[in-house]
Image (tube, rainbow over all chains, first blue to last red; front, side):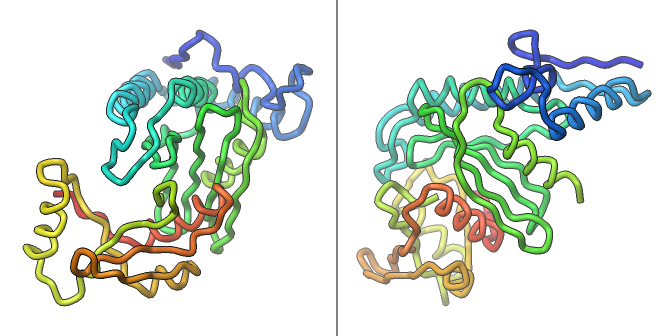
Length: 171
Length: 89
């Protein structure tokens, strides 16, 4: 078995700790189940390497920041991507569960950075950050079920984000 | 996603051929044109959005009536995107 997981700060935060921001460690069923699945996955005989897609995502983020950090970068009056938004997007990448596919990343005219997981029509989930310690999210799932909302974000992905990602990948 | 003023600029392409459609974008974007997304008006109305035609320039319109809440805007944008056809230049 060979397993390689690249993490920017040598710790994949979400893998090791509860995403609840409570500092109490793994304290709910969602996080516990998620952790157990991660452990089972890592000890499975299937070889995986995440370094390359993660590197690609970081490269995309950096390129996008260069391209969209000036006012009116789209010619339609878009707000620039701030350094705070860039740093927050970096934290998102760092805290993504390693079992989830790497998302597509894009600049939004509102000056936010968006991540999108698209598994085909009716199976899409997206989040965005703008450097204000909030994650905005929206998604469409099987059966045309729709969700949207926003959550406080500082270091760890809120459970609602992880839940929706799991929902997306559960069908 | 719509711009901060929540008026998403579009062009009505009914009756135009491919060359004519691309020429609209090229006139606006020149070498920066990356692609386009085609969507039928019915998909816009089904997402409970509206289209305001101003013909300035000719065939120009805006998708309006976006909600105020950011996450609700995002959901509408996803609904539109999944019914649109993306064509890269």
